[in-house]
Image: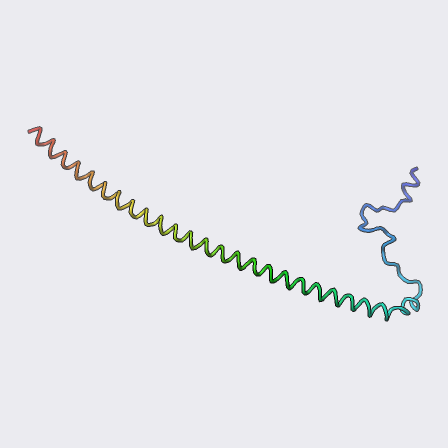
Length: 123
């Protein structure tokens, strides 16, 4: 039982089974016989895949650029709305400050007036 454990190949760290790994040809003459035909078809397939990949990447790039420009437009519109809100709030604060100053002056005027009335009543 322990011997069979030692004989088993360790597949935990392998990404693929060993039988799927490419095998080195035993003789270099045999590997070069079908190489010209297969390399031509492989290169044409790779060229087609590269064209397809490039077209896909270009399409994705266009979509991403469109999304980014739309996002930039939305952000710009929101910034304009935020700026108008800030201007409106700034105007409200100025108006509130004016009213506050008016009320402070009115309170001071009433204080002086009550002081005059109180002094007149004490005489």
